[in-house]
Image (cartoon, rainbow, N blue to C red; front, top):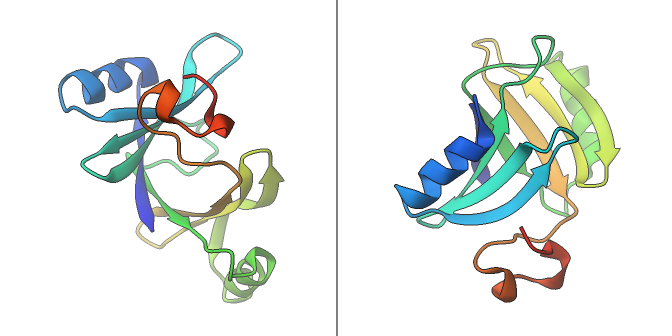
Length: 137
């Protein structure tokens, strides 16, 4: 599955727009140390959308990023090694975090592709309808 990651100036404002104006269903949110949302997942007409603040200048930046959810049948280390051996430009090296394992590549036109296997459940709908892993957003 490919899902868009939209880089926005203010994640909270964008979340409000997507839910109030477009009818998106809110999902997982991650709040940063400053109390502002640093990641939000929305579901709009069955399409998952990630909203994130504009990244720092040394990271890959385009108005959007494509995130590819890698299935459990694909070895992430092997995929990463294969792409590097083929000379693909990496903007994020393979890393494992609490949310999963991922790496990012940048194509010759500047499009960013993030390969990721998440370690969390999709969390959409009202808090009562979400899986226990989702908590309350």
